[in-house]
Picture 1 (cartoon, one colour):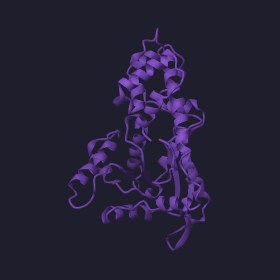
Picture 2 (cartoon, helix red, strand yellow; picture 1 turned 180 degrees about the vertical axis):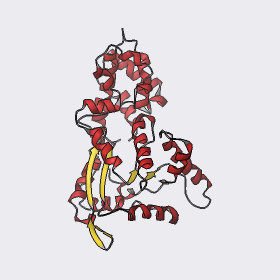
Picture 3 (cartoon, helix red, strand yellow; picture 1 turned 90 degrees about the horizontal axis):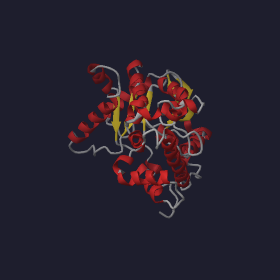
Picture 4 (tube, one colour; picture 1 turned 45 degrees about the vertical axis):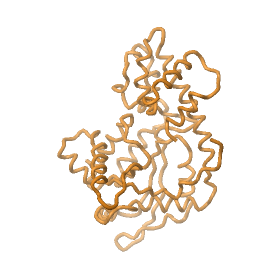
Amino acid sequence: TKYSDFLEYYTHRDRKKTALIEDFVINILQEKPLWSSAEIAFGEYTTSFDGTERTAEDYCDCHEDFCNNLAKYLKKEQSYVNLINPDYGKIFISAFTNLRKGFREEPSASIDDVMSAFSGGITYNFLSFNYTNTLDLLHKQAKESPTIGKRLHKNAYHQNAVGKLVHVHGYVDRDMVLGVNDVSQIKNPQLFENQDEEYLNQIIKRQTNQANEQYTDDIAHDLLRTSDVIYIYGMAIGETDAIWWERICDVLNQNINSILIVHAFDAPPDTLIRRKYRVFERNRKFEILQYAQIDDEVKKRLAQKIFVTGENIFSEFSNLAKEHDT
């Protein structure tokens, strides 16, 4: 689902609304292109509040209503996903253990070089920026499956493992995190002056995580910086998650053996003439590296550690949705 899918549900849903929420819905309908990226839009929407007649509490009530309805919508959507087949755990393992799928010989060899340097078995951890439980169900099946296998390294076999799953932005029923990366993305920060910190904490993601008192940010960050291979799937390179792109760039810079693989669903075909694909690939790499606090020469070096692919390793899961009315 995209925010644009949810916005149709939110703005046309027949329910009792306060005058405040009615105005909020009108703003969304008038500014549809902006609200297709809802987190950025919430930073912009602060300009509609003056702090007197329309207060920080009013703003947070709009945000909370949006989140509550998003949770209801996503609960409905996740109910359509059918994961009862016990083979799905095996399919899931086959997908995430085959990260080189679709790469040409040279990048495939580079990825192999990094992975062959690992000692012992490989542990696969997951950071989810999604609110639904779909990944959780697959993760549970994978952990219970005996097919994760062993790895031959230096003439000995080492057990691979399915590690942790951390919901960085919470769930559909608990600790939802939806907002901006930092205060610079709030157009009217004065709205929160002389207010209790809880108001600003509701809209700045890292502060929301801290307010949720689960150490989520710290746990996820620790998993990230101790990883050698980072694989990004289904996540837009957006400025409201700038802190995570900064952290990934930091891992690439600090860990000499680390690499980043990025699945790009919108990649052009990599077939007869490669110019368009190579331009896309280069642009996607530097789209990520713009978040790194490093000079251009270091960025060029780090670009060689980033691999972009249009190959969907989870393509076998494309038809999991049950039949339902639209």
